[in-house]
Picture 1 (spheres, rainbow, N blue to C red):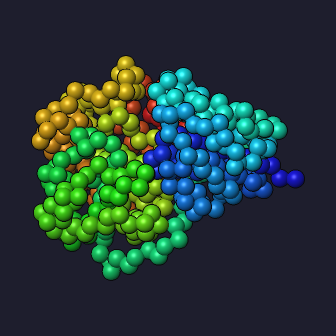
Picture 2 (cartoon, rainbow, N blue to C red; picture 1 turned 180 degrees about the vertical axis):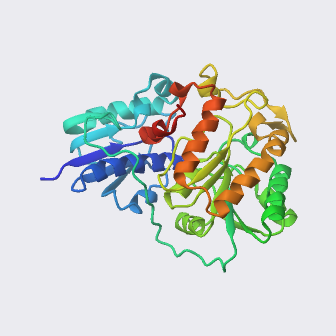
Length: 376
């Protein structure tokens, strides 16, 4: 009789956390393809991604706010009995549960609700057979649009956090004009989500999108597309250009390389084997970032700089101007298909190790995939 595995991965609702959950489902499924693998996600996460992943058999959602304790019956609709139940480890970290009281309450309820015949642990704890570092594939039910032979770059100018954590409109104009000057008639497909539907939205105003299209040749706005159409569009592009955002994880999951204007709180930590990427890392002495990892562990932002109002140092105009040539060179490699996954990982962790001053113990990646690429 085949085993059953439940990946209970309820956390904050941005899309990147759904991709993390699916990567763990994949590891348990590939270790034993006969397994029945289910996943539980926050209801405000794009759970349809799990339906588009062939390695997930059952999808459940729970309606919780991580800042508010959920009702006692929040899990009543999910079967109780599984061979294995694996939680998101963040649901058992004291500081996370203090910051998100709804999260701590949820995982206490999950501990009471589920009856695991073999073990109730956390993902990747080594108790069940698991294959790390498998390539995740998301197959959205939408037709990939024809590009007419013209190279296309998808652009997401901001994630879902506050506006000051992303480049100004003027900085994006500078970047995209430079891309056009370097690569000619490349088409720029600018993505964004403005609709308020309880999920995350893009921290870039409607008037900024309009101005971007007016000021940069070759820009086409693709706003508020259904998720399946967004992902199909991504698949038709040679790369996604964006700051750090969970949507970049999704690009990798549909096979599209990701060019990251890196900075703010977190370095990139999700890598999909076989799909190249390039993170343009900031000079953290001049443009502080990554404080939760390299500083005192505080989630507080570094002191903002003045760049058309308060701006995250790693997203300010001076930083972007200083790193623009590297960004363009990386775009050239990805457009030409001259950067494979192995070279991308080796180069990234060589640069990141230098930035961390060799403090490898502070590095993290889903499935620990980075461990094979650390210098030395």
